[in-house]
Every structure is written in C-alpha cells, then in structure tokens.
Image (cartoon, rainbow, N blue to C red; front, side, top):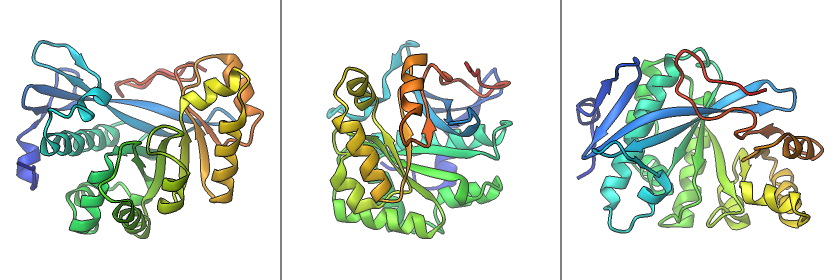
Length: 263
C-alpha cells in the first residue's frame, strides 16, 4: 500500500538523538547523509542527499541492493524512495547549506507518478513551500534504473522543468542512463558515472569524452562523480567539466554541525 498523505509520512518520521530527522519503514530506519558538489574553484555548488538504510539488527542495507531486489514490492520501494526525500528536505532545511542546490535521487517511476498526480499540488511541492525552499534549488536526479515508459519519463521531466525544478541524469554511462535517455529527457545536468572516469584514467578516453560532447550538444552542465585521488581531480579539471564530486573532495556526512570538507 502506497503512502499517500501527509499523515502517512508524518507517522513514520521522528527526530533522533542527534537532532536529525529519520524515517521508519517496516524493519528499516532511513537516515540522511549529504555529499557536496564543487565548482572548479572548489566552491560548494550544492549537496546530494543520499539515504542510509539500516535494518532492525543495525546492519547497513545498500540502497542499490534494496531498490533492485525483485523480492521487494514496488510499493515498498516507492514508499522508501519518497520517505527518504521527506527526511532529506527537512534535514537540508536545518543546515547551513540550505541556500545551495539540493540534489534528490528519484526512481524513474517516482518522477512519472509525480507528474501524473500533478506537481504543483503534490506533497513534495507543499513540503518545499512550507519550508520556503524554492523549486529552482531542487535538482531531480533520475537514477539509472529502468522506467516503465521512456515517453512517460520524458513527459515527467518536462513537467518538472516547467515547474522550475532542475533535472539531472544520474550515473550517465551506466545501465539506462545513456544517450537515448538524455535525448528523451533533455536534462539540465548530466552526472557522469565513475566508471567512465576510471576508464579514462586507465587510457580508454572514448566514453568519457563522448559523454562530455553529448552534454555540451544537449546544453547540459556536467558533473563528474567518484573522484577519489588528487590525480583524478587534476585530470578532470583539464577537461570541459563544470562540477566535481567524490570522496577525495568530501565524503557523505550528516549535516551536524557541518559536513567535512577534505579540500
């Protein structure tokens, strides 16, 4: 059964001992962590919100494994996906970075449902308005998983952009995050998967350079993900890339009292 109204979500949200909002769903606890994205001048552009799933035994459940587990119902996946954004937005609002961009991961089906139900009257929009967070500072990241319908996903992206959200293709070069999805969605931002960075550093430059070329042809900003060394950062700064993200720059952290910046 899908969570549909504010009361459904509110019953599953609490504040933990650190003062952060967390969610409870079935046997899972949902927590927020945030990873910054940097400009070439090492200034923080915004934060990507990431969910940490913890089971009843205190064991970390990788989100990728959860969302791709065929034994878990679509309703449960959608509920966890949506509940995670509820806590992310509230935790972001309490932080000193609340005037930057907030990157929120969306399952493709979640964005399709959001558009179908009407963005302006959605719980997401009402939550943003209540916290005085403008939609122009929200980046909807469409993850690399399969959409029910490419056409419906493209329509959802168009509605989001019309409502002043920014739309990003996440993990470009991985699974469904490919040139076809870029052409369908017409995103504002393309986040290039870490594997293309690793291939580039190992001498196979073709895929990364083609991704950059595609982004420029699409008039999209470029984020390179997964930077873990000074050498990788230096190499990426030699390319036509706008923003940078990875453990070398800053690891995902809760926003209390501030995230830890490596550079």
